[in-house]
Image (cartoon, rainbow, N blue to C red; front, top):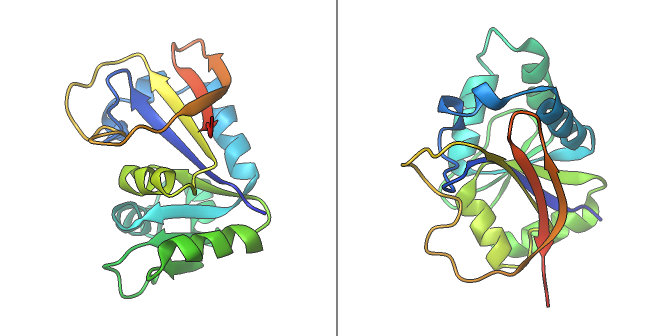
Length: 181
């Protein structure tokens, strides 16, 4: 049975929006190894509609980053959306209708981890519906000041810390699982 694992680049003030504008000065081999380890156990990638739109337009047209582009284009992908009518990116399955039931079935039928990177709205929904198995936060030592935060107007969800590691860059890698009490 698969686990849904979400990972975010996040600022000290909780911003997850546009990490391309503040994240790269902190990228190092330690963070790269963590990201690569997650990709190596991935059965595929789960995303919301906005991330799907961004990634499908970028990874299918980029002339640079050939190895990552090939990996993302060939990987299995699932997109959660009530507004998309179809998902044309190769190896992509649209999950709509009874999303919770569809994701439970996906977890039951999949070997390996279902990875997420981004999709804050989808992650909040997964957490609220008991479908998120692990949350990884790569907390960057920067205050961004504005942008979408991971948790905005969110009910209380107890989490249990299962891993913490500090990188030389000052990024703290925190791993959480839902804490049923």
